[in-house]
Structure formats: structure tokens, C-alpha cells
Image 1 (cartoon, rainbow, N blue to C red):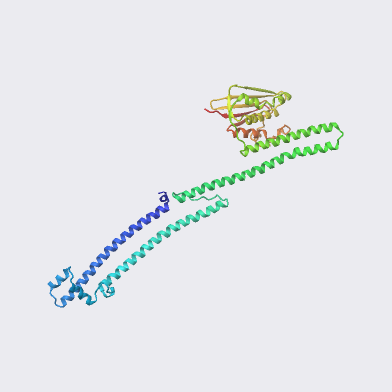
Image 2 (cartoon, helix red, strand yellow):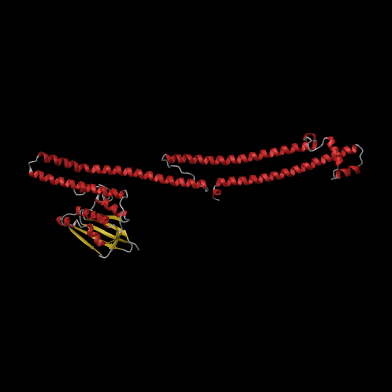
Length: 409
């Protein structure tokens, strides 16, 4: 039975077994003692009777026959009744039996008292140890109720009570994880709101300033046209910022389910740069695509295209007119890699470890377009699908982003 796996119950059960053995042992000893005492009293009674008969001059032959006789007669019974010796005679009137009864009662009472004390000590010890365990568990559970998980319930034993403790510990772990998750969610929402608020301050201030300028010179067509264009640019930047923040927030909170399927890499790249070809031509930059045409990758087509598109946008932002952006891919037995390389301005060594942080802008490229969310968003999309993204760069020579996905055997 599982109840006997509990060490305390096991020891208490052993105590009960030993206690039962003690009772039988004490009972056997008491029986032997009383048999010996009965024999001694019987002999003492015979000695007294024989001695009295000898003093009365009764012959030894008659006394011997009387002592060894086992038969009773009506005359003998009547004679004893006349003397007042019957079943109803008080024990105190029978000296030898009275002495035997006294010793028997004393020994029986002493044995019962000893057995009761031993049993009481065993039960009280078990209950005391058990009560200490319950009090300890009660304090720890009370700490759990008040979100204090610094102490843990005892896990060093077996049995039903420790199985219950293990279940409570599992529940406490789940509650702790839930509390931590809620705390992280609150911190995340707080930081997200703070980031959005901070990032919207600049374009909102610019819009307010542009509006004031246009109101001040309503008849100046050139001024109205110039600042209308700036308002459009600022609004587009705000729209891009809000859309990017919504996407990255959905990724962080796990609200996006990626629909993975086998996608041709060539089609994936084509989808990623579909809206960037015109920009590259306008900025006099060249997009070069090269790779094995039949390779496929397991991913979400739309989201992965957006991630790679963000890498290409970043390359366009940091490449001067006449520059080249190369998008290539290669396969190994264990992974497929997509490379986005440019021969642009490169990344400063002190910035290389920070480029995937949200809203991070290098002090060397403050005038470069962008909101600082493209690379973090690309990293989140790739890593949420089990991929890896890395970067290598040499300042003033160019940058290469590598997106890797493990291939299934």
C-alpha cells in the first residue's frame, strides 16, 4: 500500500507491531508468574493444613491420603459450607487467596499502566511530528497565497502526504510562472506605450510646426506645397512606426501563428523585394539576385518575405547611389542560408552589438532614413520560426546579413 511509503507512518506502524509483541510477551510473562505464584500459594496452603493435622495427632498415612486425594464427597462439601467456605466467601476471608489476588491485581495494574504510557508516548510522538509537518506546510502554503515562493514544501519522503505536497508545489510553480508572466506583460505594455509615446513626439511636434507655418503663410503657394509634402512624409513615418510597433508587439505576445509550408526560395526573395525594385531604380542602386533556383525552405511566406524585405530596405538606406545590394542563397546538408549583402557605409564596431535593439540609431548615421524597428522586427520573425540571423560588417566597406534555417533530413 502506498500509505506505508510514508517514512513517519512506516515508523509508527513498526512501533505498533513492536507494541503488540510487547503485549504478548508481557502477557506470557504474567501468566508464568501467576502460575508460579498459584503453585506457591497452593503448596503453602497444603503445608498449613498438614501442619495443623499433625499437631492434632492425625496419622501421617491419613494426611497423605487426604493431600493426594482428588475426589470430593457430599460430606466434605457440607462440612466446608458449615465452616462458611463457599464460592460466595469473601476473598479477604481466604488468607492465601487474598494474598494471591493482591499480587495479581498489583502486577496487572502495573503492566497496564506501563503499556498505556508506552502507547501514549508512541501516539503523542507520531502526532507531534505529524503536526510539525502540517504547521510547516501551512506556513509555506500561506506564503504561496501571498506570492512568496522563497520556501518549498518538503519533498524528501514518499507516501500520500508527500504526493499531495508535490501537487501543491506544482501548482505553486504554475502560479509563480503566471505571476511572472503577468508582471512581464505589464512591463512590456508599459515599455511599449512609453516607446510609442516617445517615438511619436518628434513627428507630432513636426506636424504641429508645419501646420503653424502653413497657417502663417496661407497665400504663399510654395511654402504650402513644401510643408504639405513634409506633412505627408511625417504622416507616412508615423504610419510606418505604428504598423511596425503593432507587428512587433503581436510577435512578442505570441498572437501570431506562423503558417509554415514549403516555399521556393526564389519566389520568397521575389516576394520580399517586389516593392523595392522601383526604389532601387530611383536611387540608382542595383539589386542582384543569385542562387540555386530549385531550393525550398519551410517557413511562413508572408512574414519571412517581410523580414528579408526589411534587411533589403536597411541595405538600401545605407548604400549610396551606384551601390549594389546582393541577395543570394546557398544550401548545406544541415541548413539553408539567405545572404543580404551591400557595399554601403557598413556598421561601426561599437554599434554592431546594438543594431537589433528597438529604436537604436547609430550616432554616425542619424540622418539616415528609418525608424529603428526594421531589424528588430526581422530578427523576431526569423527567430520565432526557429531560424537564426547574424551580421558581419566592415565600416565604409559594406554589411552582410545572414538568415539561416535548419533543413529537415
